Length: 185
Ligand code: GRF
Image (cartoon, rainbow, N blue to C red; front, top):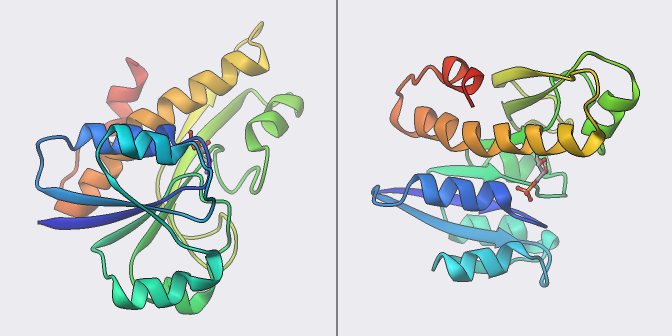
């Protein structure tokens, strides 16, 4: 059985998409959150996933005692230091076509810049924010007449679709051709 720790601080739509994708698969998930009141904890309860509140400062000690095959950041609003990242393989999802629009409010900044695309990137986590090795990235066209809300829901829809599939590829060394599937979403 594979073990996966998902780190999230807020809403948790990616957390839910990942857990649901792997229903009936031999994977054990744990939610780790640094925010006691995060909505993602409600999702964890409904999905019967063990959720653990770990203060950011305690993350290292927690992970020393609790090892996982993969660490998945999904809206975890903290920068993990080197000694934590050295404990295993950490991946993150970011709502832009990296290296463009690193950091916060990436969708809005792409929209306001009059760029013709936004995007989604999944990458390994390094010490520098949104800068680790890219695993998968895709552009999302910003069509004329699209509102910011339209773009946000498109980006989040693509995120929720691709993150579980990329995680599947990483865990099982498989190679689903995700790009072709996204076009038909
Ligand atoms: C996503 O847009 C993700 O790319 C970013 O944080 C957001 C988390 O959304 N890192 P959710 O909490 O999974 O709904």
